[in-house]
Image 1: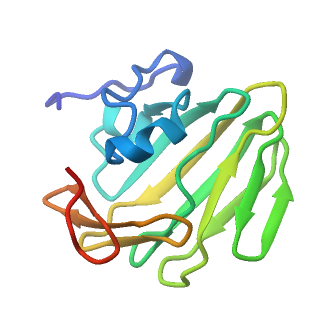
Image 2 (image 1 turned 120 degrees about the horizontal axis):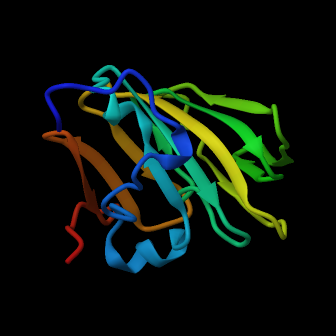
Length: 159
């Protein structure tokens, strides 16, 4: 990371995330097409992250998940994503937002079932020692040394 940071950037011009997905290869294809631009990193933010994310038609934000210690928030800028939580499905549009409090176990993600791109901001804190559960998949995650370590639900590592 740079030691000096810009005063501002035009968000759409920010560089995309270097690695398209942190998921094990067997799951990475499910988020193919997602474009994340980590805005918070450009400014050296250490307490929370901000991503400008674009989902083309058919793409999803992430596998449906819930965090143990990290809060998340999304704000829709363009398009009509479908928010999927434990409570069901809700169609969102520009100006809509949703928050996901850590520790509730309410798994969530966005899916673009429309024929136009969806663009949204996702904001999350960077609380250490976080875990994530994925109720629909044989996947578990824990935060280790600033990155994610993924395993099967029984603890076996993915290869």
